[in-house]
Image (tube, rainbow, N blue to C red; front, side, top):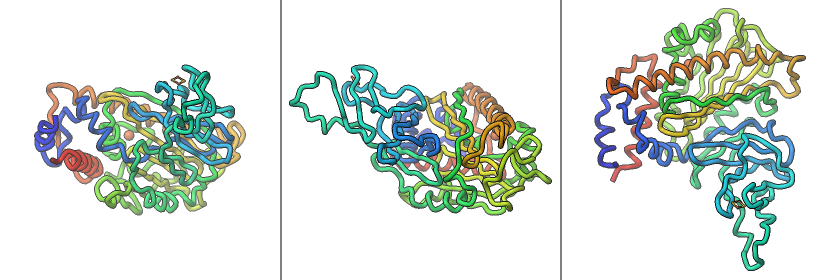
Length: 388
Ligand code: FES
Ligand code: FE
């Protein structure tokens, strides 16, 4: 497989989309997860979703799963969602409450919120239960956003923390409330989803609603006032997580990313944020959008070579009430519509690249430069990791 992989990498024409196997092969997918993605950070949810001791969120990533739980001491911890008895999944719902401990449904071992084993029915006194706690996982919280890594040696988060503080600090995200969350599953390789996510070449033809409000759909570039894309996907510090942010103009007199460009609720950002929006990427699969009056977080989770999940989380200012301070339908409209379109075009893209007639095609410069950087970076990571 490794021999073939070197050949496969070499077969990619420079500046072109990837050969078919990168989008379809289960063997390549396994390397993607274990070699390319493992050390990166995954957005799980916002702190406001787990305010009380025992509140938890589950983060799925390929075959792995983490429970992020608020402890009795108020701390947020991440624990492997795998029982230390015979390995059953413990929490099967995406979120829940476990004030009285995390209970494995199989034989009812019960774990404290710090992961230590509290009770194991009929387990003999000769077994050292202190060695049977849930495996702790790396966790970071920044601007209220919770991240986990599925590696014992995650990439350094410090640069991302500074950058997110800088990009999102003035939007009040650390004090925000989750207004809504939606989960989607779609039939496409994770790389096709991200290739699509980082370019706006498709915005005008595929996102008419987005294009009415966001200038980047018409400018042929992102129309960014500041763009530090070079920090993302190509030039992260060795051993450090990757990061990108840009400050973008909205179209005409639009104040925010809604159907009519009008604000949908109380402002969460500074007054001068109206008419603009900030895009921030932290790591590979997490994308954040900060508008003057709401925030939107997207996380892609690989599931198999041909399946990916997407979670979309909408944030509003702390205390904002649905139906009174904002209309949930209006708040979520832009990104529900845009995400539905993206999932359709990405799934169609997968059907095309899965076909025997597919040949890698040229990325169009400069409008697809981020997509090129992403795929170049990916091949670099893969080839570095399998180099003899
Ligand atoms: Fe969890 Fe048996 S596998 S209690
Ligand atoms: Fe799109």
